Image 1 (cartoon, rainbow, N blue to C red):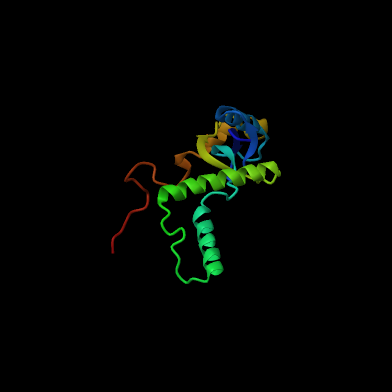
Image 2: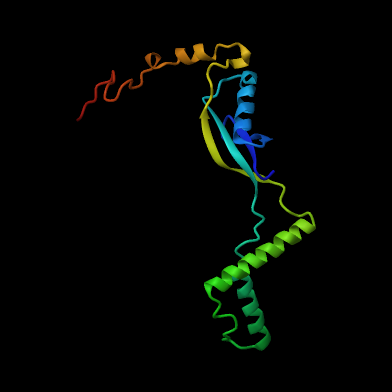
Length: 164
């Protein structure tokens, strides 16, 4: 799944696993005639596995180790692991992450879910008609600016602005 691309018409439901962004876009364009409505955009994103939650645990583990030593020795103050610097903490984080990921993989416990990142937006070709009838371009022309009450040029509107 790593490095695979999927497409969507609503930016929420992504379909397919394609080797390139271009392949996913082409597949989405091929699917347009099968849709009941013609979307304005095609979204293409990269599928990546979800983070298994194995990073950033070093500080919590060091805290637990300090508590255990304090509970064992009965001392209320201990300097054990109080002077771990940020480089040592980052190194421990990396090692813990590496070990946990290897353990998850060994026991086939890695998450099977994925998420979509790096989503690109592409205007959907309007010449591909809904249900394959080729009328998508005609429908787009009928929705043109002359059929709406929106501002058609910067500063022009059919509704006067009044300041009270």
